[in-house]
Length: 281
Ligand SMILES: Cc1cc2nc3c(=O)[nH]c(=O)nc-3n(C[C@H](O)[C@H](O)[C@H](O)COP(=O)(O)OP(=O)(O)OC[C@H]3O[C@@H](n4cnc5c(N)ncnc54)[C@H](O)[C@@H]3O)c2cc1C
Ligand code: FES
Image (cartoon, rainbow, N blue to C red; front, top):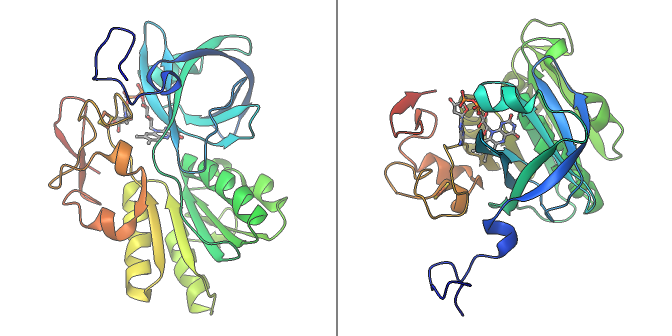
């Protein structure tokens, strides 16, 4: 089979994955001073850990994790960090954006397991989606979130409403919960005897590296979610390949076993910007 132009190049791409679909914003919610959750009137049949490409015509197109997808609406929790996200933050309910996806690998676990999910920043959003799904699959979940102070915490109250989910909060300044980082809190809970089958973590890479170090020392299965500069999202452009394996993170991740992440020379050290320059974390 070939595409409409008779080429063989794009024969494996479903139209939904290759081209953005224009959808409406139906709701915008402030999560903290930097992060808003955008609810869109579409579903991409997304699973926890996967991402979509969000297009603002005449601006750019950028990757964002699926914060929720219930088959009717898609939610994305987005931090305002630069030109694209600043433009997005000017949008109002009723405005349209382009969406394509879903892309990437999901979290892997077994029914009935006892999971730790550990999030930093907007990483709490895909982990909330994961917790909802995991509870349906008979899992119990320790939901650990951390922030520099209470006002930056996200999804604490939402997660508390889930049955079979226990929420643990850490703040660097002690304004809420445990005083210290989320990784300090993880170590504290494990030292107190918490047993766990698997740890899943999403957040700043240095935080995930520290979680991975804990998992390695204690021999606990662990998955991390890598962010690399992405343009196509489905393995064509080569923008997201990592040193030195040449592995495309959009296809082999973003969620991957932490041992696969650790085998990449750049994990926990650096990433590359849009022109391939190394940037230390
Ligand atoms: C798989 C994946 C999932 C992501 N999920 C989320 C999410 O749920 N919420 C969220 O707020 N952000 C998420 N991001 C990061 C998000 O894509 C960037 O913050 C956003 O593109 C910044 O664009 P900007 O123009 O506002 O800022 P810029 O000033 O252009 O960039 C700020 C930083 O964002 C990163 N970035 C910029 N462009 C890209 C790109 N095309 N691909 C990857 N990183 C980029 C770079 O590290 C850059 O230093 C995710 C990234 C990836 C790869
Ligand atoms: S973003 Fe194009 S290959 Fe991964």
